[in-house]
Image 1 (spheres, helix red, strand yellow):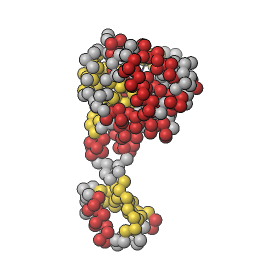
Image 2 (cartoon, protein in one colour):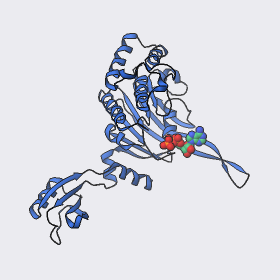
Image 3 (spheres, helix red, strand yellow):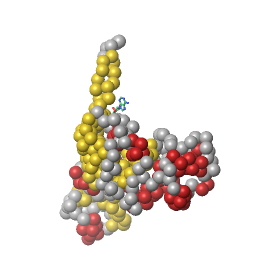
Length: 316
Ligand SMILES: Nc1ncnc2c1ncn2[C@@H]1O[C@H](COP(=O)(O)OP(=O)(O)OP(=O)(O)O)[C@@H](O)[C@H]1O
């Protein structure tokens, strides 16, 4: 579906070298990336600023030619076959719009139908689905420039999908959105992904997008892939553990230990304790605690993906 083999993109930049001199330097924005993405996968493509995410997406969509290596999307080579590819992919780049600024949203959709030559019945069916899932009706007749960011993003998603693409590239689809719009966009993408018909590659700095949407996470740094796997695998690799937070009527007896868990926090004069679950299951840890202490309340806290990713960036 999507294949990248030793994909490389170098940019030549001029950097200051002394007071007046500038010298040319080559920056490898994407540095030997090899990835295969199968049909129906939803892949999160993340990395710190300047890691090479947008450059990769630009090569996948035919906007930029690779310096070397190979790339194919739906069996097409993006730059030379850009027009054919455009008919089969959808692109949502948070910062750019594919809508007509001065026209009502509805008119943009109508024009896109002609641009992509979509049969009327297919267009209608897809638009109807987007209207209901993304709640578009209240602002279909509003000129795009008057839409809020959240409304416009819902319009952009619709615009990207009206021709029924097999692959959807999303660059920061939730950036700048309020909480409600973020949820709407995420639920919509989750539903779309669940159909298995659309392969999605998503870049984001909002890790909640990834947690909600992507089973597979590719982390890139300095143009290289530093992690490719599930979120669980990432937690495992970085030793992140679930925690048990316990409120107690009385502090724990001196020298109390819980097999397979480590005491990592004591608050409120010993009335609240936190254990990291190393090897113990939550059930076993709770049983151990209840038998030895007077437990008022407890909760299991999942490891925080922001934390793991920060550690990953720091170590890459
Ligand atoms: N047209 C260009 N000319 C020169 N350098 C570029 C160009 N485009 C990108 N770069 C450089 O390539 C590197 C990767 O940039 P890219 O935009 O792909 O990163 P990114 O991971 O998308 O970052 P961000 O999260 O900030 O959007 C950066 O060092 C950037 O400065």
